[in-house]
Image 1 (cartoon, rainbow, N blue to C red):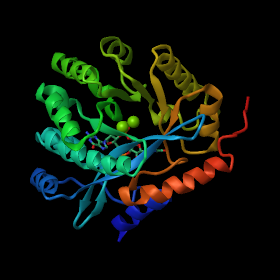
Image 2: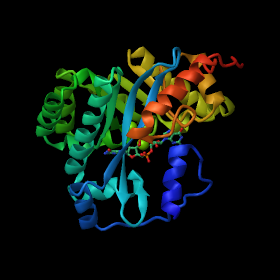
Image 3: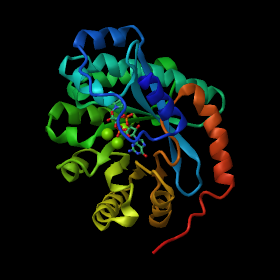
Image 4: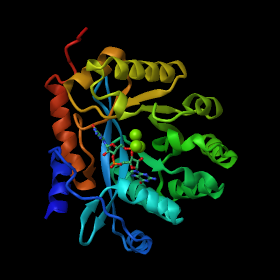
Length: 291
Ligand code: C2E
Ligand code: MG
Ligand code: MG
Ligand code: MG
């Protein structure tokens, strides 16, 4: 079926030329039961250090394994979850599943952090801090190994509670990441109010930056802000050798994107690690410096 094909393509690295699944609106109660009945699955996408190729962490990306439609991507249900007050339940499922998985990998000897995407709506109540802290404690993951990625554009609604929640999380040593940097309007204000540990340059300012002066200018500016403020800078959307070489050339810290790995099910991570080690040993990191 098309949904199965789409899922296979994501796992095995084909880029669909067009979106295979037509846009589909789901009913809120269908999503609600999906959350409670275990139909959410987590895919993991690696983050690698640019200079060494070391795998520094994995980002948890939620998918809905729909009984009829197959693998449904988050852009088709995150908004729905937010609109119908289900985003807290969804985030809790993602958090617990991903922490339990990272625990298994840590027990197997891998030194990995786990990144969780957090919605602004999750930050609307102070008890989110305790929920995250309790999950970390119960499952036995150090807060330093948990990165909470907040999408910058959604930070625009200046909510005092959200700032308070983020500040408290940071005091508890969870790591905060500003996601999709460059796509919002209040990035600099937000950087002033909260001290983020990590800045993720949005993929639209990474892929193709060698070949487009405007894209390159925004990439350079974002990297500069992140570096200047002492943040770990991650480039998302690293899709080809040119993108990777740009990161090397400009001293970006961490890379993420299809060139390194597509998001994959937990069961595929071990094999990917092995093949990645091989790519690193075979000199992937010695990209040509272009001018
Ligand atoms: P994001 O956190 O910025 O995640 C990056 C998105 O870009 C992911 O899409 C990923 O599959 C995709 N991507 C990764 N590498 C490349 C690349 O090289 N090129 C291109 N073109 N795309 C790449 P995905 O998984 O569909 O997620 C979309 C967004 O949905 C995420 O953006 C995040 O904002 C949200 N999301 C995902 N999982 C969760 C979740 O558990 N909770 C919440 N609240 N939001 C989530
Ligand atoms: Mg993210
Ligand atoms: Mg992003
Ligand atoms: Mg995004």
